[in-house]
Image (cartoon, rainbow, N blue to C red; front, side, top):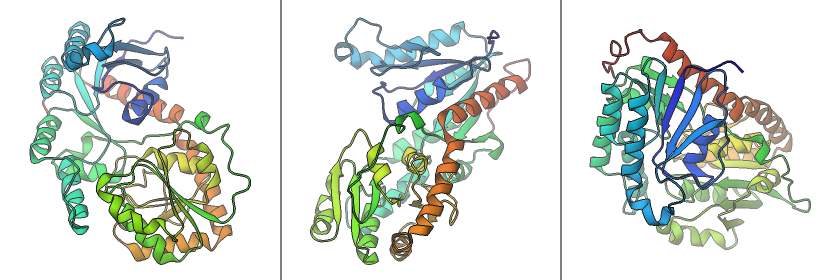
Length: 393
């Protein structure tokens, strides 16, 4: 294998437990081609396996127990990352930040001439907050999304320091442009899925009747109130299976649907493969997202997806491999559910196309694309690392 000169230093301030956003980051880095870009990951602690192709630096060195030292993990991670930046050459090193890095650390990298790229796992908080505020107010609930005006301003201040932004869907892109980011700085990309995770999954052989599936946090943000209303309105005879933890504020609203309406709560399920393989359609009417993994996974398992523009993840095409509905359009969502429930032939056609299209979003392809994009930014920059480090949002 040829020697790689160009490096990517990645900062993510969350321990790796084998799921959630850290698993996305790890899956991307694990699939960087070794002859394109060297992957280096800095994080508080890795509790789940990471491929040896990624050079991992933990904030709390072993054998110190994390439960003893977790309070200093943020400071320790910042210290170790600064040391790595101090030893790196800005001419062949790109810095890849995941939310939410210390602003001082981003500024430290900028001042030393490094190109920085910020991962946007969701829309900017300035877009997300009003969307979620409205969603809770429609239900007569006090917003519990925890996004404050101070957090919005803090994210705006941080983003002004970055050279480029990874955007996993068109709404993330829109939020960046609304914040004044130069569109030329937005790198259009996606997240992905791992086929190996579902290779041995089989469905329920004896299941009867139509099943619509939702996987994720059962909350206001994911459009659950609209989904329940649409399911009831559709009149479909079958089952709506909701898989995931339930937001406390929604429990009273969900309760009436659990008696006689075909709605079933399954709680958290670690192995969702058999559920995807047993369902007829995946329904995900989310109000605010980035590139939801469940969209790729459902389609990879051959399910047509009913979702919103927020949930389409640059893969769902209306009438081709799924159906798109507008947020809050309960009637439209009910029609989409009814249409697919009543047409096995349409479900099969959309599902086959979904499975084919999902093959273009596996992490080997996503990681390869990301590495080549980052490497291309390094190769295209001026020889003087400080010359192009004036931020133009």
